[in-house]
Length: 307
Image 1 (cartoon, rainbow, N blue to C red):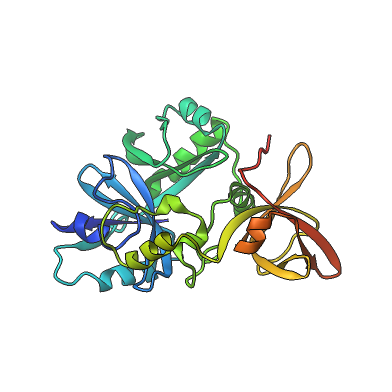
Image 2 (image 1 turned 90 degrees about the vertical axis):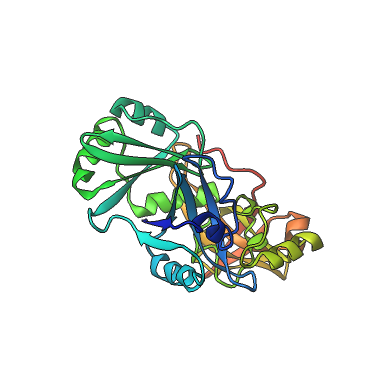
């Protein structure tokens, strides 16, 4: 993750016109996940905007950083706005803590817990300024700690001693898919429209004009799009991204990501996929094929229970 400060007298007005969610109404130490759109309403990426006192800070995934920064810079014309990357003078790193017992770990370390998602706080810890944010989560709390890179070893050691287990990218990705939280460039593509992603948490319909807002509002007034990103539970082989989903003999959609989650009760396989509206309406099991093997996919109406 990378962080960018939005500075200047026009920062609130300008940023509100660039992203799909609220900016002016952010509570102190509050955040909002946003989609970044072009004039045609197509998704260019995603970011989280945080309010830290009167400061605005953007949190951007590293693989989107250069492209989104260039996109945003392009629209600073007559505005008193400056985008300032953070962590350059003093190298900054970030550690994530995720899971249903994250709060217990933080209490053992002596760090504050945050009762609500999309909130943050800053504390002094072992001589370092530690920025703590709690992001959106479905099956557990998601914390991120931004701190000088020199403090990484100490924080990592303390979290482990308090009961946190290090995990790799594969485990984290599997948990994300089980939660049904989409990832840009994996489940969300540049061609997609906001309502197709089913992520209404990233849209604010009463904030006023922003880039791409006309298309978002037009879709809302007409009431529908022809496909939606949905969470699925699978029985069968693990399908690669882009695997065709069928309803009978008709094409019903395709997978965007899939993973098997090892559980004490046995492994379960989850996926996300773009599903056509007619298949959603019928809400019947879908089928798919991987090589010579076949499987079934069931649309989930609620997050799965993994306990």
